[in-house]
Every structure is written in C-alpha cells, then in structure tokens.
Length: 297
Image 1 (spheres, rainbow, N blue to C red):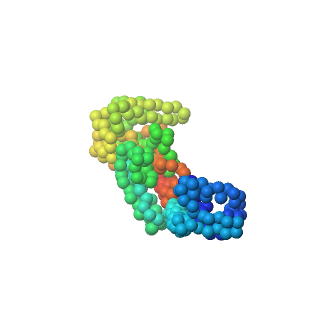
Image 2: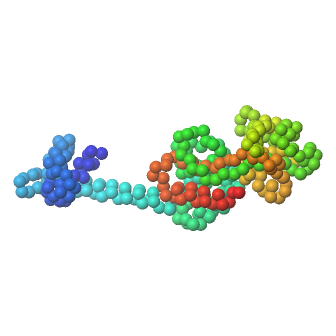
C-alpha cells in the first residue's frame, strides 16, 4: 500500500498548494513529504511536480496522475465508509444453520419474532444435523447442541435444557417402573447412537453419580424417531427436553427417575470470529439468548 500512501501525499500537497501547508495540516515535516514524492517519482520514472522557491506546479503527466489519483482516493474512502456502515446496519441477509429437531421445536417463534422486529433483514435458515465447518461455509452463525470439540471456534451459550428419562404408561404397566438408575439394566432402552460407541446415561442425586450403559433392541441417530417409538410402547428413552416436551405435555410419555438429575445440554451459537462481528449477527445472538432463556424451562 506504499504506492497508495504516496498518492495520498501527492494529492494533499497539490490541494494545499505547498509542501509546508500540507505538512502543517498533518503535523509532520515538509521534508518527509518531499522525500515520499521524490521516491514515488523515481519509482514511476516520471516528474510529477516542478518545484521552485516560490511556486509548485504539476507536469502534464503529474496533472493526469493527480486527477485520476484523487478520484481513486475518493472512491476508496467511499468504499471504506460503505463497508463500515453495512457492518453497523440491521439490514441485508443473515444466514443461519441449526439442527432440524431443535430448530423446529424451539427456533420457529424466536426467529419469526426477530424478523418482525427487524423487517429490513432477510433470514436464510438451513437445518442440518451434520458437523459444519463454519470457516469454509457461508453461514454467519451456526446453532449447535452440546460441547464442541474444536477449541478454535468462537461460541456463545444461548440456552440450556435438561435431559429427561421417560416411557409410555402402557410400557410401564407391562414392565414396571424403574426406581433407580441400576434398574434400567432390566429394561429395554431406546438408544440414541451417532457412531459405534455405547450410549451412557448419567444420573446424579445427593452428590452421588451413577452411570448406566443403555442397552436395548432399538438404536437410532434420530431423537425424534426414538421419542415416537417410546410413544409406541417400545421402551425407556433418555432425550433432550425439546424432543420429549410435546409427548410429555400430552401424557403420551411419563417422566421417570425425577428425583435424579440426568444432565444438562447447552445450546451454542457458533461464529467464525469475535472481532468485527456484524451488528446484525450480534443482535441475533443476543435476541436468541433472551428469548430462549425465557422460553426453555
């Protein structure tokens, strides 16, 4: 950018009329400005300014360089101003990625309310349960559940919710209700499984922790499918509250082991950098945090 800086000083000198006037305007020595312009002339192999003891005039090529250079500087200043303004505007497009089940359960109302408050924004919301490389994607913010392994990601916790253990009344009538975590070993557990690892359900009570390896006849990577299967009396399931909420509210499922804590899931907003975050992204994250903390109990 040294050439661009030199161009700036040429324009400043011509507009001010003398090296001294330009130097006084910016609080530097006229010799320093004169040196910059001499070096620029040497680099371009042209004479831009003819200097005398009393006068300063541009050569023909110097006048052409000055006029076009001043136009470029004005365009550059306008570009910087436009970019800064755009970053501080609550308008334009904002792209979001979120897990399907969670998005449908808990993001519909907050996102639509956000759009109502900021009508100049265009929201693009994609649902996806796979891992998203936010650095190579074009998403402004990605919503994810649970602890994230990549420590280079910038995250903001926007909500938390409990896990719930539940089953249908008919299943419990047929097989009995477990009163302790250990009793789950004699029940058919519906297991959420993303890979070949065993699913461990962790319970705590009065400072004591108990882990149970969940085993059963049905394994799936879909919490919604497991929830519906539990409603079909297939077994006991341990799910995030947002998946089981409707079935619990309608008594299709009943909660189990309620005197135990079964853990908490944290919901995170993930974004590429904490520096120079656009105002619309900041506002969305703060809005979701306030809405979800109110909505999720």
